[in-house]
Image 1 (tube, rainbow, N blue to C red):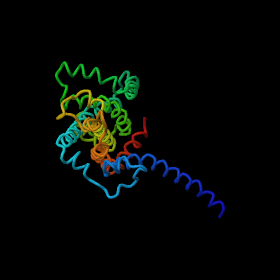
Image 2 (spheres, one colour; image 1 turned 120 degrees about the vertical axis):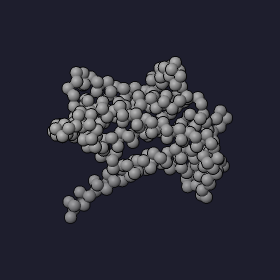
Image 3 (cartoon, rainbow, N blue to C red; image 1 turned 90 degrees about the vertical axis):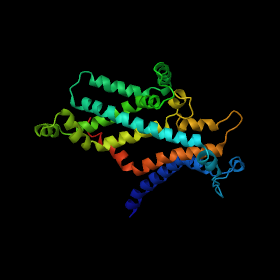
Image 4 (cartoon, one colour; image 1 turned 45 degrees about the horizontal axis):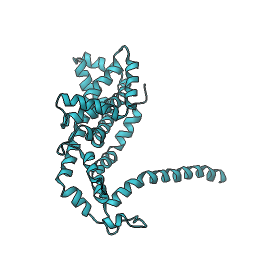
Length: 280
């Protein structure tokens, strides 16, 4: 009996520790949503109002519903996120397949370069991209934001997808070619359906990175009709004060799609990140 109790105690300890860590991480999210439901007086109340009661939705009406630029910026974020996701999948899938299947010279060096690019801060790339896009007249356009975001999502996508292609037996491709498929049709009809978990993982992360990117949004766009929601959030921070409840109302609205995507596709995301690591 004593042995069974001693075996349970470490489990309870880890549960309590995990709960504290989760609460610590989620509290800023709760505070963001709670602040969006407060009046200006309640935002600066002392002691702070932990639970907004009664909840006031005026900030959502002013900052989101009755704000055409905010609604337009959310649509812009959806366009940029979707474009980044599609371009990342189109480029990363054949690149990861080639690194997994073809005996390419310098493949190891190429993978190392992809890892290095993941460590580069975005500010290093933002200025050269601005100069380049200015010369080809792409500034203040959706393609500029999509291409810029893809520079960061593409290395991650190739690194994640390559192990998935390595786990697919080469005999399946040989059988497909015997049935009349060429290299591309075998890749499209046989290989891609088998790496679907990896494709979903890459698609989700690429979309969310395009949805929530901020530096490229303020560097490559000055037109308010093109700027995504992350740039629109910056407009609530003024020189003489910040409209915290309005800012948090739009922030909560922008964060909702991220929460919904992760909650609905959590099984695919976690499975995709772990399943592809079986074979390197």
